[in-house]
Image (cartoon, rainbow, N blue to C red; front, top):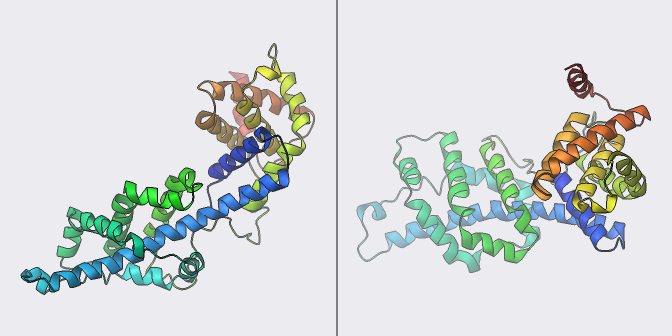
Length: 329
C-alpha cells in the first residue's frame, strides 16, 4: 500500500499538468496519472531483480578466484555463505516478483560490468567481511546483509541510478520513494514467506470492512477537484479579504482546492489529517510562506463548510477539540 501523502502529491502534479495544458481532456490526464503510479511497481521489480543478478555475479567471482594461476588458500576453498544466503531463495519463491521479471523481460547481462563493480565494493566492506567471518549466522543476519547491499551499494551507485532513469524518465521523481519501499519490504521479509508473498502493490486491495481503496481515493480527489473548480473559487474568494484571486500563487490555489475536496468528499479522512497533509504539500511544492497562508484560509473555509453542513466525517473529534481549546485561550 502506497503512502497517502505520496498519492496526494501525484494528484497535485496531475492536476497541475491538466490545468497548465489548457484543460483539454481530464480523462486522458487521469489515465496518465494512474499509469504513472502503476509504473512505480515496475521500478520495484527492477530494483528487486538486481539482487538476483548480484548473487550470480558473486558466484562468478568465486569461480574466477578458483581458476586463477596462483589462487590464495581462501580462493581455493571459498566460502559460499553469501551466494547461499536463504534470502535469495525467499525472493525466488515470490511468484509476483518472478512473474513481474518475466513480464518486463528484465535482463541485466549488458550491465554485468557495472553490477560486478558494485559487488566488489560491497565485498570489500567491513559488514560483508564480518558476515562472512561469523561462526554462525541467523536468518536475521542473512536478511540484514542483503538490506545493506541494497541500501548502501546498489541504490547509492550513481551509474546504476542513471541506468534506471534512462529506462523510464518518470522514475526520477519516484526513485527515492520506491527505494524506501523496497528497503522496508526486505527488512520485513520472513523466512516463512512463500509463493504468495505480496510486494508493495501500487494500490491496496479493498478489505471487507474498507470504505475506499487508494484507487478510489485518488479518483475521488482528482475528479471532484476539477468538477467543483468554480465553486471552490467562490469559497476561496470569500475568505481572502483584500486579496485578488488572480494574485494567488496557482499552486496555492490548487492545494486549497484539493483540501476542500477532502473536507467534503472524503468522509474517512479526519480534518486534522487533511490540514496537516496539505500544509506539508505546500512546503514541498509552493513558496516559502505558502503554508502559513494556506493554513489560515483552510481554517476559515472549514468554518464556512460546517455552517453550511457540508462536512460529514466519520470521526473528527480531535479537530473539534483542538479548535475549541484555541477559542478558549
